[in-house]
Length: 92
Image (cartoon, rainbow, N blue to C red):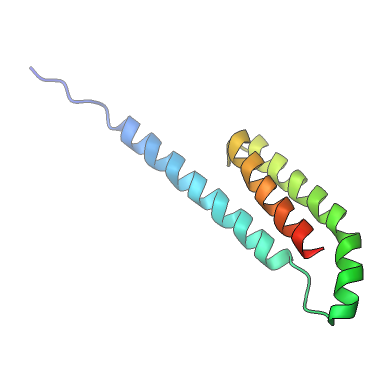
C-alpha cells in the first residue's frame, strides 16, 4: 500500500508565494501612487528635501505593519526599505 504525500505542502507553498507577490505588488502600488505630483524644478528641490524624512517614516511604518500582518518577512521589509530610502534621498 502506498501512501501519497499530503498536498497541503504544495498548497501552503503556493499560498506563501502568492502572499509575497501580493505584498510586493501592494507596496509598489502604494509607493507609485504616493509620489508627489510634478511641480516646477525650483519648488521641487526645496519641498522634496523637507518631505523626505516624513516619507521615510511613512515607509517604515507601512513596512512594520506589513511585517506584523505577516505579509512580508522582516528581511524582505528591511531590504525594500533600504531601496526606497535610497530613492527618496536621491530625489531630495
